Length: 85
Image 1 (cartoon, rainbow, N blue to C red):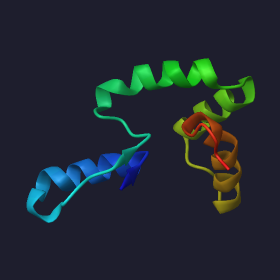
Image 2 (image 1 turned 90 degrees about the vertical axis):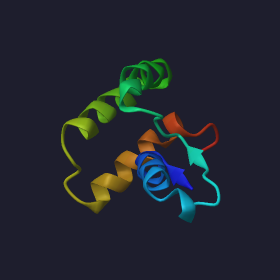
Image 3 (image 1 turned 120 degrees about the vertical axis):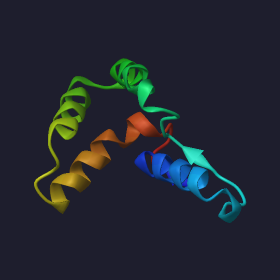
Image 4 (image 1 turned 90 degrees about the horizontal axis):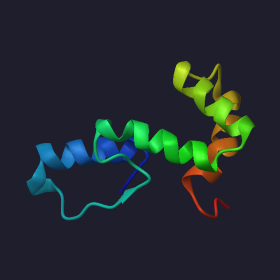
């Protein structure tokens, strides 16, 4: 199972070690790095102004600490999942 960036890692692992992978489940991940523009456009359609600003900030630099990461992840979770709870 690979979610978000973990899906990219899971895909790479499956490509390098196909005999070790019985199945692969991907959730909210990119099939290729060429998809970033499409993913951002979709996020822009769904995001509130605050979420959009937070997404750009998160892409520009890592969060300062675990608390900031958790707050950002919780705020952005609705962009990834239909029913985040």
